[in-house]
Amino acid sequence: MLAKRMLRLGTETAFVVLARARALEAQGRDIVHLEIGEPDFDTPANIVAKAVAALQGGETHYGPAAGRPEVRKVFAEFIARDRGLAVGPENVVITPGGKPIMYFVMTALVDEGDEVIYPNPGFPIYESVINFLGAKAVPLQLSEAKDFSFDIADLERLVSDRTKLLIINSPQNPTGGVLSGADLDAIARLAVKHDFWVLSDEIYSKIIYEGAHESIATRPGMLERTIILDGHSKTYAMTGWRLGYGVMPRELADAVAMLQTNCNSCTASFTQIAGAEALTGPQDAAIAMVAEFRARRDLLVAGLNDIPGITCRMPHGAFYVFPNITQLGRKSAEIATLLLDKYGVAALSGTAFGRFGEGYLRFSYANSQPQIRKALERVRDMSADLLG
Image (cartoon, rainbow, N blue to C red):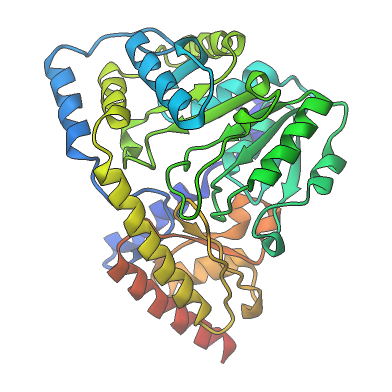
């Protein structure tokens, strides 16, 4: 028998749907993939070349648990420059992907019975890890009427003397919402007043379409109580490289490094060296990707809003849309299953991101414009069939 704690562990539905979609393709079906949050671009050539050179140069051995010193320095300098923060290499821990930062940070900070507030709908691994650790998961509902943000009064009502951590994600998965500067100011005041930590998931910080990204860590009193989660998967199309990092106070960074020692020893050296090249080398490819994402966003939002029974807000960041499908008269999970099985479009039910995602679907526009047009035609066919 498995340990009882395994019953508290969730999953990431995108990979489940991807597997089902691949199985249908193996049967000869034509499937449009809008389910997985993975850029369809290749990793930029300069990054690949740096990794190849590192491998050929013998960078195939163990490294320090927290990351190679010279790479931690590059990452710290990037964050200091990009966010305007006084951080150094001692504040950086490099991990194989961004999820270990979520898991290690919560493991290091949260005791059983502590409360963790997290966005809902939101990335499902937040709630999964909170539950796994025996803490209390407290959902903060994101509202379409507020452009998938929330009233600060709603957040304040959720804060208690057991609140240990608040998770925020901006730009956000699955909605594409972006927290405003005023939102961040208000959250920061609450965090200082009630003395809780903030895990700020900023993995989509460079995929933003209006204005500039802002980090809550820049607010007064927040640098010492914020963990910034960032990584290379989305901005540089490096999902398979497994490279993420966290920026946090040194004492916490040391604890996270110890957890990494116990779990996976270290992050691959050649991957880290490639990651340093990504941040210091040419940015043309990354900029071009964002421009293409913008064009796809505009195409998909306009197309969805032209389909009876569906409305869709314009996302301000990341590469997802979160259309409202309540007028179609079916539950989100039923619509997502129907869309894949009958119409050949892989998407995710809004409830894959929490109970407040009911009435929505998530489409990733990390696919080509021709594929998006094909998906829109099929969604239109589904809508016509459901609405008669």
